[in-house]
Image 1 (spheres, rainbow, N blue to C red):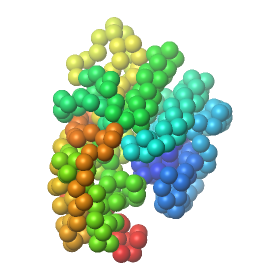
Image 2 (image 1 turned 90 degrees about the vertical axis):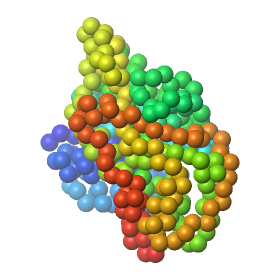
Image 3 (image 1 turned 30 degrees about the vertical axis):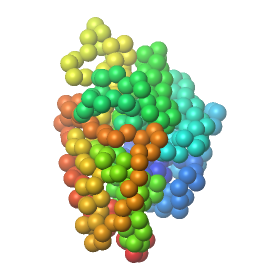
Length: 336
């Protein structure tokens, strides 16, 4: 039975990833600190469902704890690592940047050091579409330069890409970095727009709509995202022997390292997203129109052609269907 180590296992995306590996017959080691950044009960409920499997081992600790990951790697010798643990949120990084330094950068360093000592067959590390920063040429392609991050959150995630590349080069560690594009769906994070909008609309409270609604996002349904991650597990990058990278690939010329967008390849206007929530809830939103928040960007849009070429897969869930699934879950979970 192959073993996967998933960090951030009780998180929104992490819990789905763990479940997919378990369903595929893997043993899963799930690491999560159950931080109080948002409602811990939600994380505990996700984890409880995973703990129903005899093939799941739960570990509670911080990824940045010195020696923790080294010990886990030595003990479990994971075949595949999916690193999702991170301090998330663009806006919170303005108020508490140290949390991002410790979790995102130091935590990833601890992971890379453990992998250096006990190399897995493939490591897949989460980055973000926010890494594209001030780039305005869309859709975003993995092989364009991304040097001007707009938030400290994005800066820490881009830093982890650079760190991972150096370890891939120096120690021949196969690493895939995936850049997420606005993931949403059932069991989502309460700090994200869909969760907050749905809650307030159902409670007849106004919603804050930034940049006066003139924003676009490439919304990616969580089940589609996890399917892409699962398929990328088998797309192990290799170092090009001649240093020549195939056209359209983001493969490093000097390392077994690649960056892959995971997005729906469709930039949706925020107002249309809100309309989908209104349709699913059967209620009209009260909109509090506000200027752009610091660190945010007006639009994201993925070119997911590399994902398709590597896996043959492209996300397909449209916003109305994905939002309806979330609202159904929300009503059931909160009994509203």
